[in-house]
Image 1 (spheres, one colour):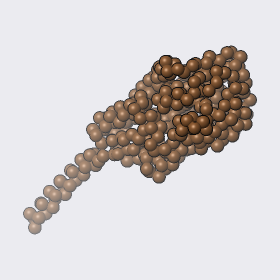
Image 2 (image 1 turned 135 degrees about the vertical axis):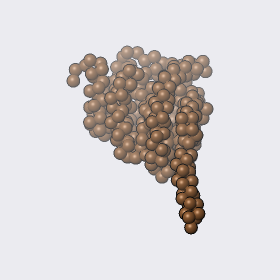
Image 3 (image 1 turned 60 degrees about the horizontal axis):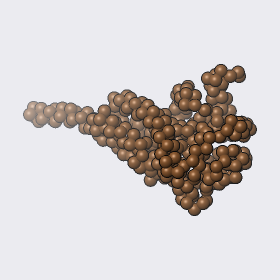
Image 4 (image 1 turned 135 degrees about the horizontal axis):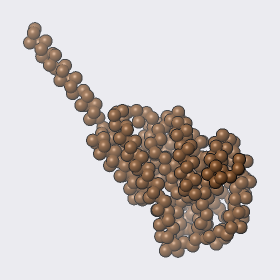
Length: 337
């Protein structure tokens, strides 16, 4: 009996010693979806993050990336994350707004006009917006911005009146945005981002607004000979993960993963801004003509946008968030209340 008791105690000791090691060695497989074109710099940056997470977790955290919209456009990706088909995503504010409309605030046209203004606004507002997303079940691992949205158009006229005449692609699934565009007199056609090229090839649309790097990486610019060199709005986004998946990761690993995500976000911001400038030069070499709007034309764009602000405030974004951002911008510019 004593022998059996010793054997039982020895077996229990072995099991208890092995349990933590087994838990520690458990692989956490994370499926991440993004519209970032396959092979693009954005995609390569995500692959670098996957390698860094694997390194700091000693291979426990394995990030698999589904790029180029293979998981669908952003509203579809968010739905699939909701049913655990995907666990993480690099998405723009368009996708994030299906979780919390607060993230739309940064995309109000012509509200923010420089990188410095965007960075400051995101620094101030980001923590609160991240808390709102976490309440919905999503963790913001890093904020990112994909660059400044500009118009790619079929005619050499940078005026707002001329752009109202073209067939402009609008994000499918953004019914409020579509309503605002039409109320402002624009002829917009809703399409999923994954169908932009098809829409241009079939003449369903003949103009679109996006970041220069995306226009180059997707080759969409080949269907529009002109780009209006005016910063319409930034397109911020975030690297997010479902809270359920984040909670699967051992607590002792999370600080290291967040630290790598912070480094990645800084690289993403720096490289994206350089990429946009390089993309414009690359497209010019391939025939794109850059239109520099006159001061009078910019003033008319701003006049048209400001006329739409009362409709945007309280409808597209909350009154609270609109006023908060406007206050931040005025303080940065030294303007009165």
